[in-house]
Length: 158
Image 1 (cartoon, rainbow, N blue to C red):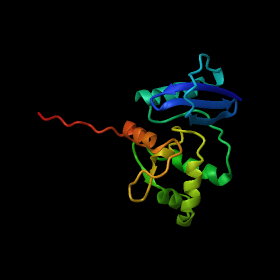
Image 2: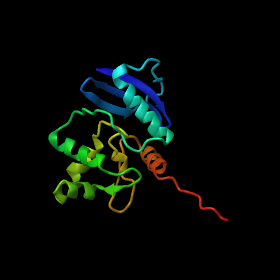
Image 3: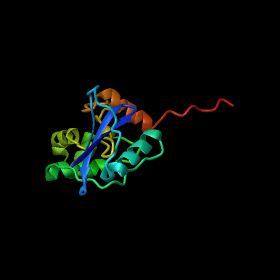
């Protein structure tokens, strides 16, 4: 297992993986962490794609992923991966996509355990009332990511 750290507009991100794919991407609150000087070959594509995303040059990811989780969690993460760039869905929408509106709490819990920050876009899930509910990376980061994906365009006055 290899790990590298990169600088993002939201702090230092940790990326881990091996030949089977990326297992974890997370944002760290550790202010002592610094970006890695050397990036392991196996993680380079993930680093490039994340950097492109933050530059505004990428809206989808095509890296090989290998997150660890239960079958149900993996189903939820798969549904999250289908949410289009710049769009949001509710936790209830995810539960309905899974075929059981009653599994909303379980789906929300799996959403919160998403190990692939940004790449599996759990930040695109909001409350049914449109509120920015729950986000492991902090609501300010969720708000930033949503604004990054759907910036307000200033209309021309003339």
